[in-house]
Every structure is written in C-alpha cells, then in structure tokens.
Image (cartoon, rainbow over all chains, first blue to last red; front, side, top):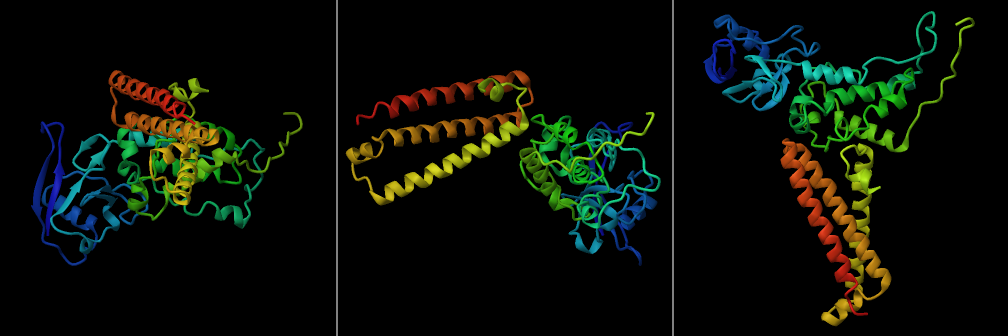
Length: 243
Length: 117
C-alpha cells in the first residue's frame, strides 16, 4: 500500500516535505491507524498522536486524502492510493502529523464548557426530565478532535477570533442544558462580529465530523436564540438561611 | 444608527439581521417589479418612465437600491474582514467601497427624482 506522508521536524528540517512510503499490510490491518503504527515500526521518527484507537479520544485527527478525519475509524479499504496524510490544516505543526491545539482549546475554554448553576448543590444530583436530557443529543457526543474547526475556512482566516464549529457546538450544548443558568451571559459572550458571526454556513464541519454531528445546525440555533432572546424558565433562587 | 453599523465595534447580531432584512426587501421589490413589468410590459422609453412615475414606485425603488447598497456593504465588509488581514489595506479598501456606495446612493436619488412625471 502506497502512502505519501507530510514530514516535518523543526529541529532538522528547514521546511516540510512529503515522503513516499510503501507498506505491506498484514492480517488485521483494517484501519488507517493500524497502517500508521506499522509505518512507525519501519521508521520510528514518524510522529503522530493516538490513544484509544476507537474514535473516542479524538487524538489521531488528521487530513486524510484531503479530508479531515480520525485515522482509527477510517477504513484502509475506503481510501484511494497513494494515501496522502497531512496534519490538520490551519494549526501550527509541532512535528509530522502532530499539531499545536492550544488555539483550539483556548476557544473551547472561552465558551465556559461547564454548567453554571448558582443554586445550592443538591444532595444527590441535578435532575433533568427525559425530554430535557434529549435536547443534549447530537451535542454531548463531541470528542474535541478538532477535525471540524480545522476544516473551516472562517477559522483559517480568523483563528484567533472565530470560536469555530467545535467550540460553538459546545456553546450550544450548554445553552440548551436545562440545568444551566447562564443563558444570557453565554449569548452575550458570542455577540461580537467575530466569535459567532464569522460562520457563513460553509458546512465543511458537518462534512468531516467523525461522530456525524452537525455544528452548522447548532450555530443556526444559537443565532435563533439570539434573535428570539430565548430564555429558559427562570429558576427561583433559593437562599440558604444564614448565607 | 449608521455609526453603529459602520464602526468596528458593531454588534454581530445587528449586521447579521440587517443582511437578512435587506435581502427580504430586495426579494419583495423584485417580485413587485417583475409582476408590474409582466402585467404592463413597457415597450418604449415613455412607458418605462411611466412605470417609475408614481411617488410610491420611486420610494420603493429607492428603498430597494439602498437595501442593495447596505447588503453589498455588509457582504463586502465580511469578505475584506476574512481575506484582507493588513489593517491599513483593509481600511483603505473598506473606505473605497463605502465611498462608492455613498456615490451610488446620491446617484440613485438623482436618477429617481430626475424622472419627469
């Protein structure tokens, strides 16, 4: 099987280059990651991230034949040869297929990816009705692999300002959570012309998401909430005596 | 209002809504113009002039064209924001587009109110 792999070692290379390599597949080599690990046996300077090898951790996102995806859940049989592998576009390359995800996680952090609830902590848990819980389907499954955000031209042009599809999907995940009380602050946080409104519905995010999620729809829903000023039912603040 | 729209500190929501509102106005006017032309096909310069003679038609046309200019401004500004990262070049290009659109607006008024009724 023929591969063309992006190689770059900042310590020894002036600039990146594509390396052509061939690999004899063995029984059990089904996914692209299997082949990559074999290639790493041949040449252990090949650098990539991987962990769970089953599409859950999101470590091995890369650009496969021009399309972002996870090496561990991409079948070798589905790929045309030579298989061209590059790091995720739009992020600084640390080495070979490893990119610096700092910017990506800064945007994720900026949408406050946690429940904000000022009510006293209940003894067991904050309950949700099955209907409210169902609103999180299609949102909570995101594994933050970065395939969508790095496929988004709006992110390429304004990586420091546009939150990107992954971050906005998560923003909507918390906006639609019945237990969260910071709806207004979250919407206000996305008010400037760049953070949310750089999305022009290009929909590369939907095309590449390895979990089959729809960030584009989540973004449209956030815009909808901003127009309608949709607010969740007001929670009654319970003051604990003496506090 | 204009200050809000054109300054860099404008709200993302306002720009997004304005773009859609102006698109709606343009769509409605296009339907209006199309049906007027289909109902009474203008055959010569006089009938074309007669079409734009009523005050309401001129106001509607002006609203349509102003919507078009505003829509174009919002769209071009977005493109420049995405593709032109050097602040000075971007400001120069934005100013050029803005000046052209203002000139078109004045020209529009001049043409519409120059029609003899």
